[in-house]
Length: 206
Image (spheres, rainbow, N blue to C red):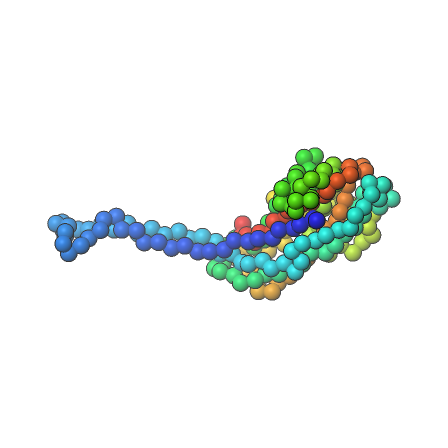
């Protein structure tokens, strides 16, 4: 099972910390009192909702990945939407940060190195070599053999900001973000075994 975990963070914090406590029983004998006032201004954030938190592709043979389909056997869309927001980002730009484990020699192919988060039966399976998942920003409507394009501008690598907005832009609740995920191999037939990836989508101002 190929699982895509989606999460976000939000929150604001304010604090008031006195430098010295004053009480009626032990008054400070001075003509002045000091008070430390401390707070922190942080960027706001928004919830992200995902229509399909788990994506499962079918079973394939190594030979299904070939030059004819440009090493891609299947693609599926992913839809996220903006939920409740707290605060704003000031002059910063809103964006969706995408992160996750990738192949050592291809930062555009997401693949987890083990099956530690899977079921007991999956833990006994080998991890397929040279296979993974490629993500594109937006809905890909082209031919299957045109999907695998590691250098295309819409291809997402680990740590890339996507759907970057304008400075001070505030997104409306319900705004949708479409991605396309493809099951691909790294320019060769993959090894037999399990392919999985945990990919994180995070709302951020940056």
